Length: 413
Ligand SMILES: Cc1cc2nc3c(=O)[nH]c(=O)nc-3n(C[C@H](O)[C@H](O)[C@H](O)COP(=O)(O)O)c2cc1C
Image 1 (cartoon, rainbow, N blue to C red):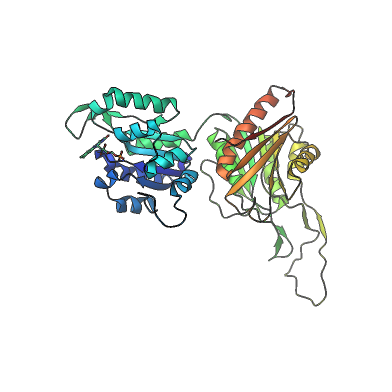
Image 2 (spheres, rainbow, N blue to C red):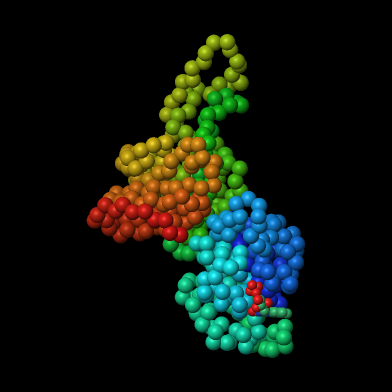
């Protein structure tokens, strides 16, 4: 269940007998590394205590709109969630979802959320078989909602038949599987992330504000797309993404030396790292002492990793990131041509933008086209970016040149 690591899973709990299984579901999801928030319906409280779910999720449990803060919890939760799983989903809840009702917190979150929704129905076999329930399920199915189960067997009421909620382990595995797709199946991808550190003396260095979050999100999304991923990372405080091989380095030179052999054997190279452009011309062997006089640092160009990989005789399909403080489109195209790479992904950096933030917005430019990915979390942007890279990679592998310049904006999830 590596694909659940770090994921934001919102669990909706409804008022049914199998609500007791939600506690185990939350526990399994957390054990797999997911962050879990629980929204309970009003009647769910008659079947399971909020405190149990709070203790197991490690987060406050949401039962209704509260008066504190903005009162917009449905929007906050909807933006936070990367998947919603309603387990158990009662017959009544399926009917409400099919109608698109928002008269309680869970209903409103489901309407406001653009992330995939899954339901795990649990009810008496006759309720499940009823044409009204079956109609509601088919409406949800057509709308793209994943319906997990139900299982068949003995029921709490003594009946035997379909209507048992799937087991927590099975539901968690289905959620984990929902993060995987095969857009990059069988491909080897090298990703760089984070800043580099260029030593001045044994205790000081030149660096930048890159947190590594975008690069780690890209590595995660590439892995979820079925690729074998090598991540070469400058110094950051992030855990290694699940299923990704991670090499930690410090300087641009070390990053170059780690990347080159990997890139030679890869299909795609995605350079997200904020690699230093310059490094100190000399590294003092001992700590530089304070002096009364001004001090001027002599700098020399640091290794240009992206250009070096793009210049390899059997270069992989190269994608570079460009952190800019202005003229995004022009600078991105200029960088793409100067580095000789297939695609450049540009983002604005500055106070509250790009580095050290949770959200980002990206402009993708390639020969003959561009695409704006509107502001979103770095993980969601990475998923959409990987889909675009996969599409351009397939076209380039087929030697297809796109006929017309394309300028578009994508803001749906
Ligand atoms: C003891 C008891 C057990 C229930 N079990 C279920 C159930 O397993 N599945 C179901 O669909 N409804 C069941 N219900 C009915 C739901 O609790 C009822 O439809 C409620 O309005 C659901 O609200 P909610 O979906 O907002 O939680 C049960 C009701 C009671 C009193």
